[in-house]
Structure formats: C-alpha cells, structure tokens
Length: 212
Image (tube, rainbow, N blue to C red; front, side, top):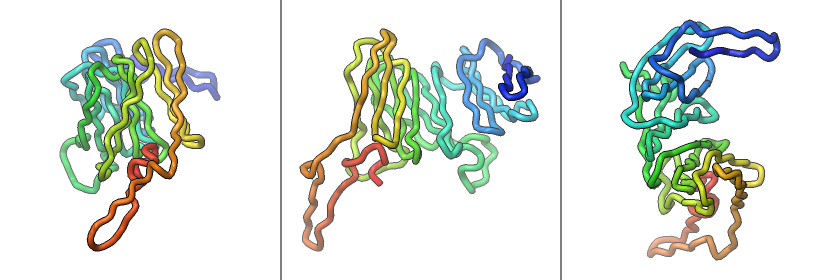
C-alpha cells in the first residue's frame, strides 16, 4: 500500500490501491504516480483520486525511476538498460498505449541504481552497480559519445547534478562521495573544415547541456 503524509496539515492518508507485492520504487509528477513492485509490476495511478489508470510489467529488475523536470518523460532503470518513456501529454500522436517508449540506452555492465536528469532534461545520468556513472543525451546529438565516469570502488547508490556549477556528485555504498566538475579549454573545441564553409563543432564541449 501507499501512504501519503501531508506535512502542512500533519495528516496521513492511504491511497485506495494495492500492488501485487511490496513496492520497490515510486515516481510522482502530479497528478500521475508510478509505482513498481519487487516483481516489476507497475501501476500508473491518478494521485489525487487514487484510481489505477493502467497496469503493466517490465521485463527486468527495476531499481529506480525518475520523471523529467517537465514531467514529459519517465526514465526507468530496467536492469542494466535505461528506458525513457513518453508520458501521455508529451506527444500529440493519439495512441491506445498510456506510455510510449522513446528510446532504450545501453553502456553499463550492471544494474542501474539511481538516475538524475539535467535541469533542461537534455541529459540523463545513470549510476550503476558496476561503480560507474553514464551520461546519455535524451535526443541524438551529432558527434556526441556518451561519457562514463569511473572512480568508485563499490556500487554507486546516488547521483546528483547541479546546473549552476556544472557539477556532479556521486555517493557509493561505502560512504565515499566524489565530485565531478566540467572543465574545458579552447583545445576542446574542434574546428571542422570542408569545401564550402567552416563551422565550429561544440557538441562535445558542454555535455551537461546535451550539446546545445
């Protein structure tokens, strides 16, 4: 069951829904609530009314899920893969499916343990049990290659991004915290020349902004 604690009114209410087994993770973007249990069965719930809108099951173990800042996308760590789903209000195309798979991302060798979006939702960070963090772009960016951050000795349990300083913080199961900063020089800007014109390719310069 799911209990909602209202800190302002100091009250507790239990949603009139029930999962098939113990709930493993939750993601809330009012009015939608997504809950996944330990058997990978997922519920899409209307948070205010407490009504189950849809039920489905993921094929692999789900350890975490996060809504994007605009609530238009839902990132789900399905085993060692990252799946990004379009929410119903994120597409104008009519479909009978409440969720539409936007894309599946790979590159990690063990299960994803935590996820974090950049503020402009152009980049997704995925922490893994393989002691590394992977940076993917939501949409395809020319000449961009996903970045992997390695340095922990035990599985990472938390990853956080701060846009003001372009800094990433990661925490592993042994309590170690690592700070990752984005720094670049003029040498990092590649100048591409062709027969017609000259253009500066800056996609890989600021990977936190997805190359924009």
